[in-house]
Image (tube, rainbow, N blue to C red; front, side):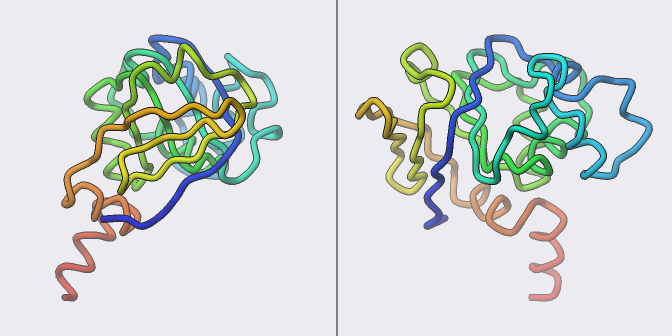
Length: 167
């Protein structure tokens, strides 16, 4: 189980944020993470890639990552410097793609309604807890199974498999 604590500023987005909002299709002619990061969330928040700081956190409502199955969406978020994504719920394929590339995801209920853009969050995955440092509130977070956490801790599915093969 990961001992990592995540702490960062919240970038708040709404419900049903689809993969075309995360990374518009016109930029899918590359898989270069840095190029993709330059266009991350630009339709919802122009200049997002320049405003985000390493370690910041995306907070979204229900069904984050719905739409197409493109892996470019979690890649651009991770490359933009976002440490993790917290949402009320995730689209299943987005959730799996995020694990595959090593982007931590946390499902928590109630936090979206009570947290504002710019609030500071602290996430302790091992304790199953999210603290809103700004407001002094706490929320429970679904704890990922150990094997999924191990994949994320290794940077994604491919590095995890390589480590196991080299074993």
